[in-house]
Amino acid sequence: MTDRRFTVKKKASQKRPHVALLILLLVLVAGSVFMFWPPQDKITQGLDVQGGLSVLLTASKTDGSAVTTEEMERAQQVVERRVNLLGASEATVQVQGTNQLMVQMPGVVDQTAALNTIGSTGLLEFVDVSKITNETVKTVITSGSTYSRDYLVSVGAITPGGDTPVNAVLFTTDYQQTGDAATDEDAVTVNFPTSMTQDPLSGQSLPYQKMTGYKWNPVQLVTGEYTPIFSGSNITNVTVDRQSQGSPYFAVNITLDGTAASAFGATTTELAPTKGQIAILLDGYVQNAPAVQSAITDGSVAITGNYSVGQANQLRTILQSGSLPVSLEVSTAQVVGPTLGQDALRSGILVAVIGLSIVALYLLLFYKGIGFLTAAAIGVFAILYLGVLALLSSLGVFALSLAGIAGIVLAIGVAADSSILVLERFKEEIRMGRSVKASSMTGVKHAIITSIDADLVTLISALALFFLAVGSVQGFGLTLALGVI
Image 1 (cartoon, one colour):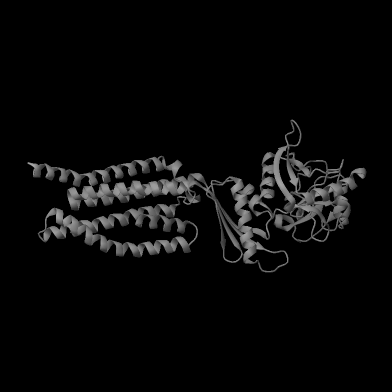
Image 2 (cartoon, rainbow, N blue to C red; image 1 turned 45 degrees about the vertical axis):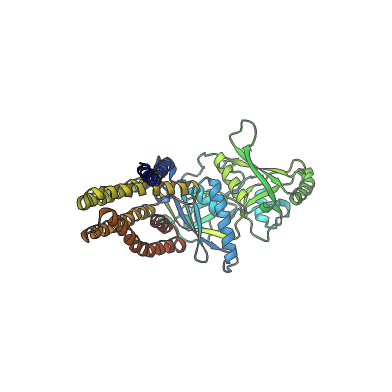
C-alpha cells in the first residue's frame, strides 16, 4: 500500500514540469499578444510602409578640396539632430561612400520644408552693416529695405543691355537665352530699387504679372566682405514666440554665451546713437537688417522677419542642431505617399497569410493529427516572434519595412521546415519499430542536430546582411536572424 502511494506521487511529480512549462508558454503567448496588438500601433513602420521622404545628399566644400571622414561624421550628427527635431520617428541618417548621406524620414511628406531644414548649412552670423566691404550690398541694406530686391526675370521678358520695364539698378547676364526657351536656370538677376514696397512674405501678387520666371532672392555676402560679431556656435538657447502681442508673425529668440553677449553689447552700444544696422545672416544670406534702437547687453536677441510659425520653427531647428561643416546638395529626393505604403503593407500581409495557410494545409494533409499540432506550434512561434519585434520597436531598434515582412515570412518558413524535418524523422523512427514515446524522443534529438547545422548557415547569412548591408536589407537580415534564433 505504501509503495502504491509512492508510485502515484512520483507520477504526479513527473507531470508538474510539463504543467509549469505549459503555464509559462501561455504567459509568454499572452504577453506577446499584449506587446504587439494592435500591430499598427505597437510595431513601428518604416518609410516604405507608412510613407515618408528619402533623400540622398552629396557633400562638398567651397574651396574644392575633398571632404574628410571626420567632416562627414559631423555632418551626419548635425543632420540627425535636425531630423529628430523635425519629429520624424525612426528616421535614419547613414554615410554612403566618401561624400554622401542617405536620409530616410518615415511619416514626413512635406518635402520642401524637410529639405530646407536638413540641407541648410545653418551658419548664423550677426554683422555690423557699416563694416561690410561690398558697397553695392551695403547700399541695398542701408536703403531701408529689410529684404533684398533681387528678382529672377525670364530673359525673354527683357532686352539685355537696354531699357527694362522695371527700372533695375543692378543687371547681370550670366545666362544668354531668350524667348520661349528661357527657364529659371536661364534667367538673369535684376535688383529692384527700394521703392518696391510689397513684402515677399505677405502673399500679395507681385506687380509685374506679364513677366515670367521670377522669384524673390535674399542679398548674399561672401567670405571676406564682412566680419561677424558672433556666430551660431555662441548660442546657448533658442525659442519661438510671437513678434508682439496679437501679431500674426513669429520671432526666433536666442540667448548668447558670455563672449558673444559682451561683443554684441559693445557693438550695439556703439551703433545705438546713430541707429546703425546689424545684418542677420544665415548661410551668408541676409535675413533681416534691423536698426539698433538701444544697447543690448543681456545676451538676449530676437530675430524677426515676419516669419510664419512654420518658418520660425524651421529656423529654430537649424540653429539648435548647429551648422554643417560642409555644403550639402540634394542629389535625389523621393516621396513615398502613405496610401502607397499602406497598400504595399496590406499586400505583404496578404502574401504572408496565404503562405502560412498553404504550409498549415500541407501539414494537415500529409501528417494528419500530429501535423495539426505542428501547425499550432508554428502559430505559437509566430505570436512570440511578433512580440519580440514589438519589443524591439518600443526600444527604437526596429522599424518594419517591406523587406522586413519578407524576412518574417521566410523566418516562419524556416521554422516550418525544421518542424517538417522533425516529423519526417519521427515517421522514420516509427517505421523502424520503435514506440511513439521513444520515436518522439529520438526523432526530435536527431532532427534538432540536423536542423541546427542548416539554421546556423542561414543565421550567418542573415547576420551578414544586417551588419554589412544598409537600409531595408538590414531589416530583412534582422527579421530573418531573429526567426532563426
